Each structure stands twice: as structure tokens, then as C-alpha cells.
Length: 177
Image (cartoon, rainbow, N blue to C red; front, side):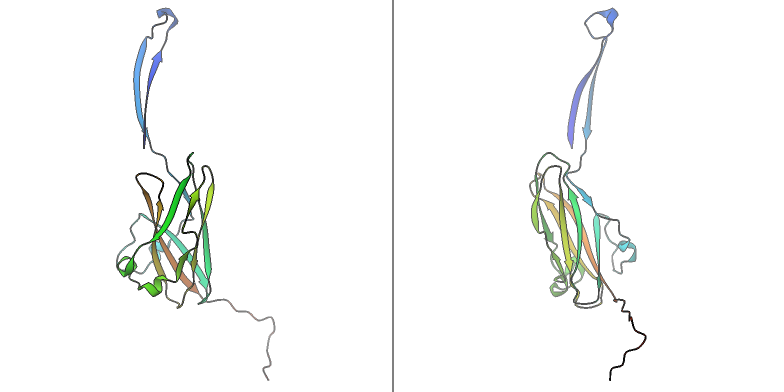
């Protein structure tokens, strides 16, 4: 949030060089530190959990075709400011955050844990999902702008689902013997 102030002066030729009207103006402007270019997800409405998802969370949904297959989801974060911004991803700790034990949380990996977004540029963020079972997995992450004071944090839910691969044959029959 930045505060601005100025003076509005109205001059009339009949009154000479002294202003006829003088008004003090003031205002505040809110500008984002970054734009997260992430498609909307309806996962929050399809989610099976004891508690509803807090609306502060951005949802990143990764779909894997089968188990033990690494699937990657990429998106961009844009820096509209004139300053370089340092960031880091921090996974929220423990089973209290998502109801999963640590071995299940290891199915998700952030491939861009930290970096610097240059002024007026985009930075590609990447997450990897490698499921060990067909169950839907969730992991909570924080995107922290470290170089901004006070620190800015955006909250993310990374959700991973497994779909069965579609297998097709190009022959009507196969003779195995």
C-alpha cells in the first residue's frame, strides 16, 4: 500500500496568477507484488475432507496417468514491480496440515524451491507428483516473497489424483502361443 498526496490548483485568467481554487487530494494505492498465472480449479468443491478448504488457498491440481509415474505441473509467476523479488517455497509441516504422514507427502516435490523473479519478467514454477497408490493426495505449501518487507505469503494446496491409463490395441487379436 502506497499513500499519495497532491494539490489541485485552478487558475482563471481573470484573477491573474493567483489560483482561484486550491484542493488538497490524497489517496492510497494497493498494488500486487506478483501475479500468479494459475488456471482456476474446481478441486475445492470435489474435495473429500473433514474440513472445508480455506479460500486463501490457491489450488494446483496434478493428474497422473497410473502409479509410479512422475507428472509435472508448471505455471508462471509474474513480477510487475521495478525490483527483483526473491522467493522460496516452504512445505507446511506434518500431518496436522493435511492428515497425511510424511511418506505420503513425499509424493510431491517442488522443482523450483527458491529463486529471483526479475522486474517485469515471469518465472516458471514446477511441482512433481509421483503417486505410490491410487488415492488422492494433498500437500500444503507456502510461496514466500523473502525480499519483501513485511514478508508476503501466498498459500497453495497441491492436489494429486491418479487416473487409469487408456490402453488401446491396433490389432483385433493377439496370439500368445
